[in-house]
Length: 147
Image (cartoon, rainbow, N blue to C red; front, side, top):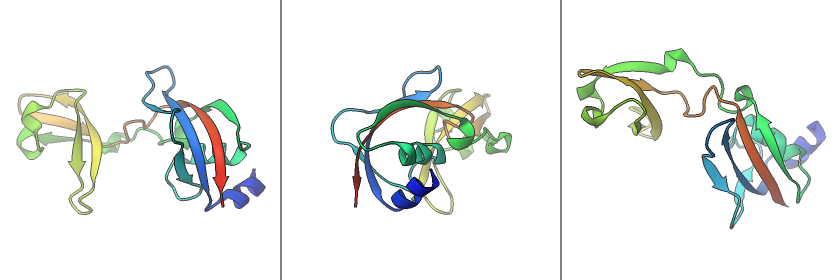
């Protein structure tokens, strides 16, 4: 694998894929139409996906299980915080299971976060990646390697 990785690091691959958490509903389906461009080694996808794309032959297809440690990591309890409802944009409407865009106060980038608990006065927000702590099952097709 190391030799293939060195050969592909920094290169663009064209990929089709579909999948999601093991035993749950599929969350992504890019298996039809134009393939997705991914630059190997650029951090665009989890390490486990890069490992798979480095191992695959051009034109290869297959289904793979990606352990959470090589996907989006373990769920970190420190990433769960409780706030007064008034503090959270749209907090008056949040209920457990709601997903909102949270704007980072410094970078101003929005990230999806999940409301995991709510009382009349507070909401508890989980800042972990939505797929943290979950093993993933994905089908990949490596369409091409671009120079």
